[in-house]
Amino acid sequence: MPIKNRFAELLPEITAWRRDIHSHPEILFDTHRTAALVAEKLRDFGCDEVVEGIGRTGVVGVIKGRSQRSGKVVGLRADMDALPIQEETGLAYASKTPGAMHACGHDGHTAMLLGAARYLAETRNFDGTAVVIFQPAEEGGGGARVMCEDGLMARFGIQQVYGMHNWPGVPAGQFAIRAGAFFAATDLFEIKLVGRGAHAAKPHDGIDPTVMASHVVLALQTIASRNADPVDQLVVSVTSFQTSSTAFNVIPQSVTIRGTVRTMSTEMRALAEERIRAICTLQCQSFGGDAEISYRRGYPVMVNHAAETEFAADVARSVSGACAEAPLVMGGEDFAYMLEERPGAYILVGNGDTAMVHHPKYDFNDEVIPAGCSWWAEIAEQAMPISAR
Image (cartoon, rainbow, N blue to C red; front, side, top):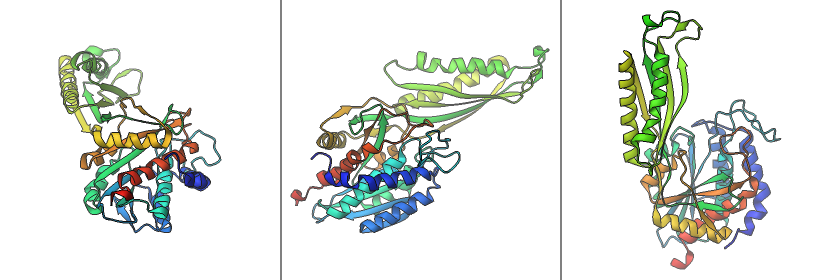
């Protein structure tokens, strides 16, 4: 089926929900207002069960189909949190919270899944149970992992799970997906390079950590160019370089560098960490200094399951007429934790010609809402067809 007429009818209302959420962004697990709004609407829709507080501030709604003979339970997940960015859109519904902004479209994801939940609760045209999952803290907090640790999958009997993200640069309402590794593992490092401070006029009296750190930054780039197989994906980015002194005439005692590592396989992830530790330790030793290394593993590689990916693509084709092959994405996505727990798939829906996500002028494209809602509703109806009884 193409885009459902019901979502065209509901578009003004869903848009109003989305813009209200956009005006009141909340970061990480502090999604109290958004979660309360979601829970209230799910109850108003007539969901059979609404549970709050899963994964601290997550919300789960249970919608039973006309029959339960299939025994199937399908999870549909949207993220609710915003980013610590100052909005620069100038929109009438722009963020009212200084330093916080829905710069990744989670307001749109939440609104679209609410729209799908309303439709599914109204029609119940499926044989089984749809579980709608509203997750906090995707942006660095690992909310999906926390919800899973709270027993999300077992408590609600979820057998498959599906997620969606808007994507600027793809025509509005069109879809793209890929099987296997899709979004990268994301790790963080912080390295304190310790030398010996001195007067800038007498560098021979000290051990200059700025020189050490400069060599380390350049050497870290050889991990991708000289240690990794060229066909494997690896990005090592140093994003911060801070000295312990701001004076013009002081060689500092230490320099701290920070950055990220992004990989698409467990083998490359292990190689990158091993080489970072070796390079930093040995480069510092060669200058007579020391390295204090903190390496923190973040989200794992997000891997779409083959059968569920093909199913998700078929549903997308039924909604929009086509589904493209998505490129690898070196950004992270904590839906990876849910896909480690249950088979499923994650799809991209086009946001049109807009600013990229995480940009202060980004805005979710409300024209996407009918397509996104239709995809989620069709996932439930086609995965649990009434004809299967």
